[in-house]
Image 1 (cartoon, rainbow, N blue to C red):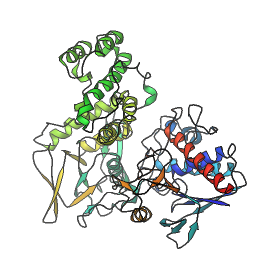
Image 2: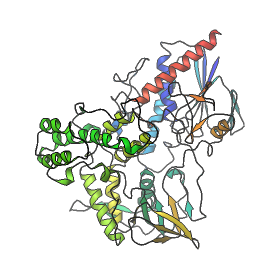
Image 3: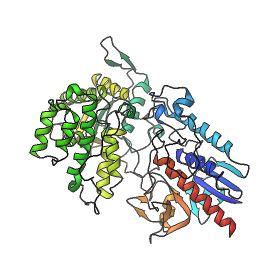
Image 4: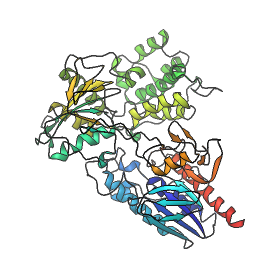
Length: 552
């Protein structure tokens, strides 16, 4: 019997098991025993059932699936299954709670386990893997699993971030955080305006008994319960992520641009600024194609005429500016990547009320037109496939800002909380110091400091494998290579590499903590998702490895 251990029971492991089950029909293997190690039920920590229903997914139910379809280019057979929306009977545009997604994942796990042939056993261990010594996985409950192959798929790992005393909450997954130490009415400085902030905001407002009501004028308002603290929030950009776009609202991909594709040459500049103009031009091509197709009332030139002139002009040139001004009369409709990436740059406000008014107007505009910039997301992904290093990092941050934001309704709620005085804004680049037991925040946007007894870092912990997860830290001590704080793996096979670049024959790793295989938790249907292609390749590698071992 051959034994495979999966560390982690989240979507990645469930997806790998689905591909194993499908490929076993074409690649028969000797008897297998599969161990799945995770202290949480199938689905993992992020999707566990015992969390607040206020914690939502930032994907629509119709955009979530654990089963491939006929668009997926993979070697293994395709076995279809329902999306989350189909399984739960939800409208496809609904943003479900994370625990609803967890119920879907547990059902998927059960269906997949039930589809395995009788030659495959699955053993679940509801505990944590703490050490990997040779072929032995040591568990927190004292048990040991002897295994032939190990697949590390832990998902997000805990980090070790600096803590500034009892009034500070360091980065953490919000459902794990004890927020009871934040008293009603207290000022709280919050660093971060991303998804972790949205979770925090909801747990400290509606989660403490406050309510939202839409008035006859259509405006959403918040009614205080009295138990809420006052959140002073800022971030690197000083603005929240754009609302989650709806890919179904797009007209379709633009025709290929005629200029050279960014990153398609033999060498990519190490300095992101060196390729930025070419990137902007390609993103502008996608943006203006969508604008011409969907908002003809906002444009003064047909797309073919615009495209013919645009293709020959350099980004930022006088000719480009003149063309855009002629074709798009309203400056607010023009594509400005610098203002998009850093909208508060160069702005300063004399009061928080002035800053909040500016932010609410901006947020209201993005909620009213949530898909305005969605057209450039596919272009960002295409360009990102050709880049690496700092160049890729800059694009990844912009892609997350545009495509990984909260549901639009959550941003309406943010505006309502701002009008109620429960959320207040610090602006861009807040720097926090400690003075006499108090936290003092200075930002590049607000012209005066803000002082508070409490500080919350609203983000996930840094995923540095040298700390937080004892198993991964042990691998590094034993000679596994790290790059940028992540476990180094072969980009094709996902085998763990040692410091000499040699792949380990029996250890694979996929997830945010590894240098390859860093994808979202779920795949979008009918998108030839890399999630399925990667899982299929890994499952087939495992089965070939098992078969080769049985023949030796």
